[in-house]
Length: 65
Image (cartoon, rainbow, N blue to C red; front, side, top):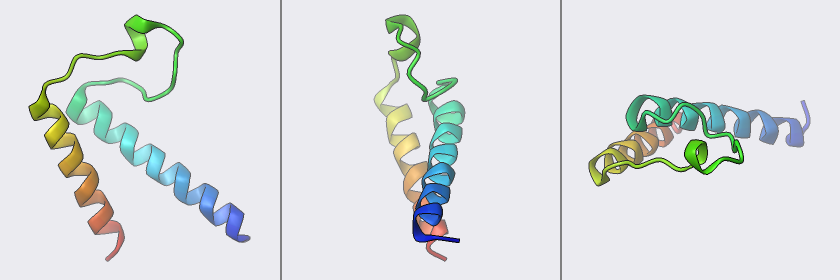
């Protein structure tokens, strides 16, 4: 496997994990742009943002083990 393939695999894995966090914590169905304000902008509380950031931080820590 080439280094660019590894980077692409890593980026895909990270994107998948971030989407999972967005869905579970922020209740955002997708992180894909849908070119519609009603679909691309979401109201979330600071508490939800904090939980999502903690989840992302913990996912990063776990990936280093």
